[in-house]
Image (cartoon, rainbow, N blue to C red; front, side, top):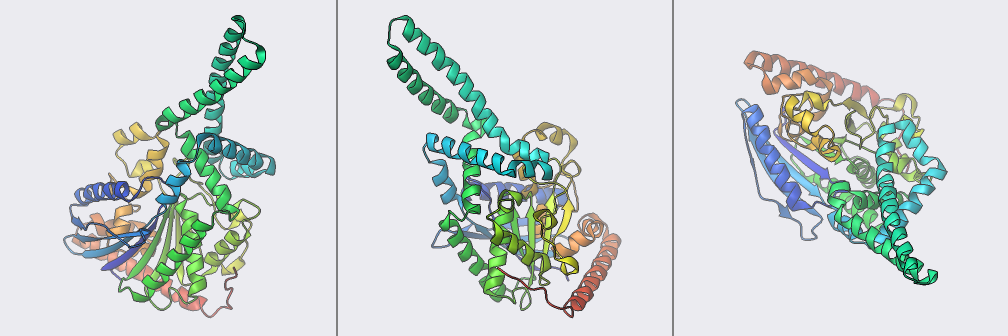
Length: 432
């Protein structure tokens, strides 16, 4: 049951930072991981596929009594995202505002608020900032227009000049305050999720289909002990889409090769699933909820305003599969428990930094540790089933480690027995 080779398939969310920045962050955090647990972890240079859609590298991790090899695939969307961010500012603003008010009148924002008021506040934040900046710029344009009137400029001309000034000045303010406010990025995110939900971004669907085929190919050819699909942030719903489509390509996925585990972290499923038109997406959630050959683990953190905390991705979408349900296992994560207090107090209000803690190194040993999930010897499903035993494997003395492995083996055996019994039940198999 000890993992010697693991294959990670990581799906980036709506993050314009590309491969180079992600790889640098990953390498830096890997070094912190090695220092924390006093082990050796070496990483290869990334190799990029000819189509530029997938980058891959390997990690070799060695501790006193175990070692693992990790194959890591980074699935890329940054080219699409950078194209969105290059759109003219006026187009981004008008499109995002129009979409936001459609969400308000459709009751979708209210549903976000009911599911998680923090996320509803977060998605409203860029529009409030936009309004504040527009009011300030509008005041300047108004004063300027009155000044033109005072020197005898006709109203029609002064109003036209003031309107042009307003547009130019607002665009300038948005552009040069972006690094502090993230308004344009968040407005682009709003537009993208709307268009993706309404199937208006065929290039995204086509790439997800290719990634689904990649997953099928990996499962058929790898010698890994487990394949872990990681979806962070918007990658949460992108990863469920990919996995559901892979199951459609190969209904036996996960039965003829390594165990398939879906790990969604910092997820925000409702920004797609709460749209009335997203019936196919909700059917994909239904598929994964009952799929016996897949383990799905959804990690959530209360401190992260960009995820839905205490949110059930199945029942909260109105999906009822009864006793056939087996996914996901919802795991709460306390960032306070994995970061040293002095550092936690420094960044607890830096919302993007908090959001990315899911994929950064721990400063304190904990059952939730992204790099131990990626590089450690404990299968992910077992880690989440018996977290204290998984932690003992990483930090205990030899006796504690032996006892921990026995507990993990017992949990694995029990899970396997339950899975065998479930196969005897009538199939509740997939649609969509």
